[in-house]
Amino acid sequence: MKTSMKKLTCRVLVVSLMTLSFQTAQAGLIGAEQAAPATASTERALILSTLDRGEVASQLQAAGVDPQAARERVAAMTDQEVRTMAQDIQTAPAGALSTAGWVAIIAIAALVWYFAYRK
Amino acid sequence: MTPAGAGFSGSRRRVASGGTLALLLAGCAPLVPQTVALRTGWPDGVPRSVELRDVPFFPDQDYQCGPAALATVLTASGASVPMKALVDEVWLPSRRGSLQLEMLAAPRRHGRVSYRLAPAYGDLLREVAAGNPVIVLQDVGLLGTQWHYAVVNGFDYESGTIFLRSGTEHRLELPFTAFERSWMKGQYWAMVVLPPDRIAATADEQRWLESVAAFARAGGPEAGVSAYQAALKRWPESLPAAIGLANHLHAQGQLGRAATVLAEARRRHPQSIIVLNNLAQTLSDQGRHAEALAVIDQAMDPASPFAGDVRSTRQLILERLQRGRSASAR
Image 1 (cartoon, chains in turn red, yellow):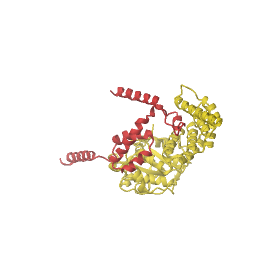
Image 2: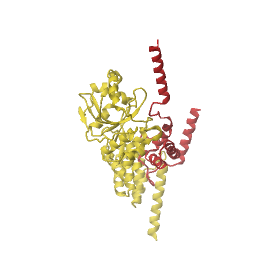
Image 3: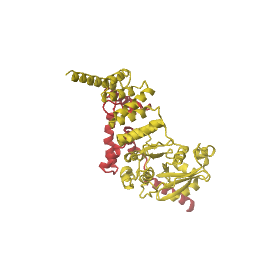
Image 4: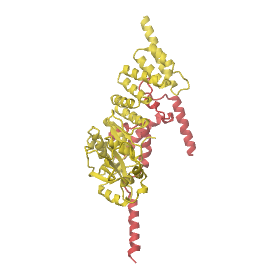
């Protein structure tokens, strides 16, 4: 399933790369990003990235950011960053210890206290 | 590839626990590989003791260590941005923290280039020694994970101390070992913020140019010109720097300067299809169609990934030539 998804993604990318011309800085000029050796041409999924920008902006809104500010925040990101963000915003570890973590710690402390002192 | 990690940060109110952390970790030298390496190999050319006393201090409240750290380095770099504005730019209310990725994106909106450092103690020290305060991501939790952004503004080799602007502490001192323990959990994440005409002391050519491209994308042509100009000065052989500079000059309407930059790039990289294509386009935009045609003819390589761009540039030049001819025939 996973490999077939990957294959499909690759095919979509190859076709879109063939049919779309490369993103140009302005009419007729090829952008500097294209000259960077590590920038694999397969990274240039322009259609995908436009979708991602809207998606990430609404994810930011869902996280409590004002709609206008969310759009501006996304605008400051590169295509690559937008793609990373689209995945990260859901899977990133939380900033603080979760309530469940505290419950576990208190429970363990209570057990230790019980066995150590109650005898 | 992109320096974007997944961590959130919320700052602690009780930063004083840094001292406790130091006590706990005092015996952990083998667990701090980079500190051990520093003991035998201090980085060349880095002074033993540095403290950037002019770095401002923004005490953070309500877990807003991300905006506070950004305000600190932005102000130190000469761009004074109110912390209130930065809260709107990097703060995620539902998570009570800031994403690393947004920490890197926000300075671009204030005319500053942000750059993620290589995960090395030596590079951190080198940047501070060069006068650049460094934002670091630490895990300062005692029991669980507690992410926190702070700004390193100094160090002292003799006493083995790192100085930070952190949380509500104007001058937090942490032993090298304790600092490494808190820093390594975030994969030694660190970033600097610089005005576009300066380059980080530890900048790697390719990664710096990625930062500049991201900066230019958000900051417009004028900002792009000065950042690419500085990069080309530092790495005269760099192809992306030359192309970026020329493109931004072109966008500003400075076609003559763009053509000069591209002609020099062509001398250094005679095979580059991008240089040939962009030079031909620029010459043609200047009205030098015949020269442009001679240049674009050298770029006609059907196997190149830019073959489509080259063909359409050539087509455009031919159309302009014909239009010119029919206009003069009339």
